[in-house]
Length: 291
Image (tube, rainbow, N blue to C red; front, side):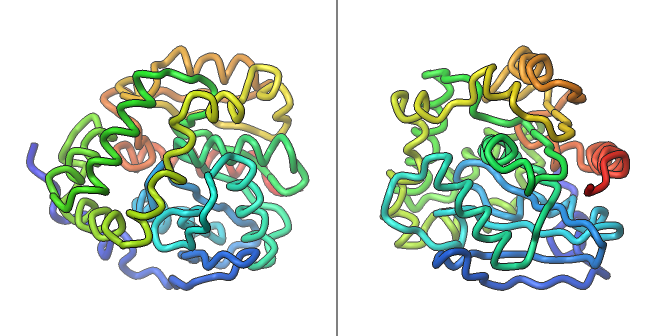
């Protein structure tokens, strides 16, 4: 389909005061976009091999009421890439180090895919730091070898071969409508993928696509049952990395959670259904202020 060329990173942020800086989070230089001046904070976390631009259509609407942080997670984007496998406790510890570095005592977390996995683990282990949790096409509750191989193969090809078509293919894999993988987003991701340190670090970044490693980190039903913070689950019915029963199971095991399903939507519901998601998210946040 034809891309909407009126929606770019700059037009999404137009008229908004924001900053992009590098924050020292426990010794890891961490790329951070910050906007808004609300008394409460929401932190957005992207998925595997992603970056903060995954939330570019969500930052301005949320910044009208909240202080917004979107970060490149450990080993991702332009954040530091220490040389060890990135398992979920490492991501959690990096996130909490970021909270400490910028003075966040307690925040709402909106996590897409891997970001939801990390947010879930943080809500289980450190509920005093999490005001509410949004699981957006969240990973980490199943180990599907076919899906894991698709993620591993498509990402590795795009990183190890300097062919923008491979990056475009990787981005389009996330979307129900390939037009949502805009040329701008493809260019941003291609530049990230081909940093020498990103290429050198790809095994660490993809460690959770190894079955044994994934099973060691997975969120089991009994883990999900420990999530006591208000939780919103958002899922696309055309998610290539997880079917609707996966979302329904999360909803079943997290007491009091809400489940929203989007038609004609893939693995980036916050992007493909941005207007609908923003409205639902803000209504959810309004019901669950920081206590």
